[in-house]
Structures are given as C-alpha cells and as structure tokens.
Amino acid sequence: MPRFAANLSMLYTEHDFLDRFAAAAADGFEAVEYLFPYAWPAAELAARLRAHGMEQVLFNAPPGDWEAGERGLACLPGRSDEFRRGFVERALPYAQALGCRRVHVMAGLVPAGVPREGLRAHYLANLAWAAQTAASDGVEVLIEPINPRDMPGYFLSRQDEAHAIVQEVGAPNLKVQMDLYHCQIVEGDLSSKLRQYLPTGRVGHLQIAGVPQRHEPDLGELNYNWLFGLLDELGWTTPIGCEYRPCAGTREGLGWLRALGQPGRVGRVDREAPQGRLSPEWAAQPSAGPNAKRPLSQRPFVCTLPRKEILVGVRGFEPPASTSRKTSCCSRSPKPKGLVLGKSTA
Image (cartoon, rainbow, N blue to C red):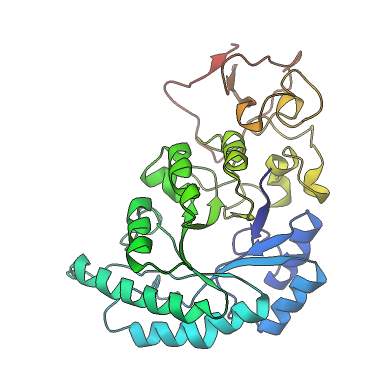
C-alpha cells in the first residue's frame, strides 16, 4: 500500500503552522510537504521534523511575489536573476537543512501578449541551470502541470508537455511532479497516464485530491482505491502528497486513510466512517471477507445516494451480507447526475 505525506499548507489548518507537524504525526503520517518554508527558520522546521520522526518530501522554490498573484518566475523574461538568487540563497539551503530531496520550481503565469515560444526558451534555460546547480546537493528539481481552472494562465498544464521538457533538458535530476487532481481535470485517463509515465523514471513525486472540489480523495469522481492498487502494481514507494482541502476538519476526514490500514492512528479501520468513502466491510480488511483475496485495485467502492446505493468497482465482486448503514457524503460535494457506472441495488 502506498505511503502518504500530509500537505501542511492545506491539512491541519485548524492549528498554527508549527503545530501541524505534531498533529500530522499523531494521525500516523510519517512525511510532510508544504508550499513554502521561508517564513520560519530552517532550524526550527528541522527540529519539528526530528521531534516527530518525520520526513520532508517536498517544498517549492521562491515563486516571486505570491501575495501579489505571482506563481513562479522560471519562464518569465527578465526575472532569471531573481529566480536563480532565490533558488541558490533560499531553496537549496532549506533543502539541505530539512533533508529534503525535492524542490518544486513553479513556471509562472504567461504574460499577456508574450509568445509562448520565447517563454519556453527561458523556462528550459532556467530549469537546466537549476538541475545542474542542485545536482551536487542530491536534490531533484520538479515541474508540475497545473490545471487552468485553478490557476488560469499558468505556463504548464499537460503531462506530455512536462515530460517533453524533461527529456529536452536531459538532466537526470529534473523530473515531473504528477498531481492526479490536476491531471484528471486537464486530461483524465489516469490509469493509462500512470502506466505510461511511472516506468520511465521521470516522475519524481505524486499528489492526490478528490475531483472536482479538491476535498478528501474519497469524495468525488475518482476511485483512488483502485489507483492505489495500481501504484502498488507499478512499484511506487515514495510518500504521496495529500494536497487537498478537508471537507469538515482534517482528522474527521481521514476515514479514507484509516480504511487503507495505514500505520498508527490512521491505520485503525473506522467502521463508523460514512459511506461514500471506502466501505470498511469489504474494502479495508485484507484477511477476512468475500473480497479478501482480491488485489486492492479490484475491491469495490461504495457511495450512498438518496434512495439508492451504488456499488462501483469491478465485475463479479460479492457484496457483504449487510450494507444497511446509510449516511451521506460531504454536504459540499455535488450530487452525481446522469449515468453512474456500476451496479445499483435500489
């Protein structure tokens, strides 16, 4: 089963930032990521990691003026010196202090009236420089396609373009940060994309969230239970970033993680978790039940809708003896309309 990293920029926001490390550790997370570390001394962040036995798996290089709406500098003409200073003077020292092997370099927003071809040349030159500069520190430079709905005008939005850039630069430590939330919105067909790109070795990090509202992974149109099984099949072992906005409190929304049998607090199966999440009777028990011998990617998924229980999964599964518990999904999630694939027991 994949391992997971809590994204402390989105999870545990009910706590002050420095207290989020302890909260994540208490829920069983052994790794963290977040947008930017620069508002806190590197020594303080490193002490929090050590105190809770946690691994820092990712953060972003300085993005320019974030509060003013900038979303990276790497593709912007006239900003290369600023980008490179931020990378050398801030990103790499923090990576060394935190023992973090991955730094995400944001491309930036396309300026009005500027041809993309010129921006691409700046982008590739800065990425080649950053990868060469980071190599001696054992740090990977990551680029992430981001969907245009969440970040209109962002330079990079497609997986194929990101992989073409990585191949063109040719640096072994330049890789793609594959956020399945963004990929689903822009392209879909996630299982094929994972099978296509993970074996290349060009994917350096994965992130997840429910689609379309970016809540918990079990809320929305994606069957992450199946995708996690596929990641096992493909041999993915690096902690996956949980970069989502909790629907109603971070800990309250971790039923999806408990159902997967993760270590610590999140490893306990929560039999009171609402349906619409993984059904613990037959998706969470590897040692009992009619589906016990099925690979994780072939266990069924339950979502309860008004007057109708939709069992979505694979053909030929055996439902549990009782599926009488009726609760609803997050109230902020839209009700599915139209055709629902699966077997209705209504």
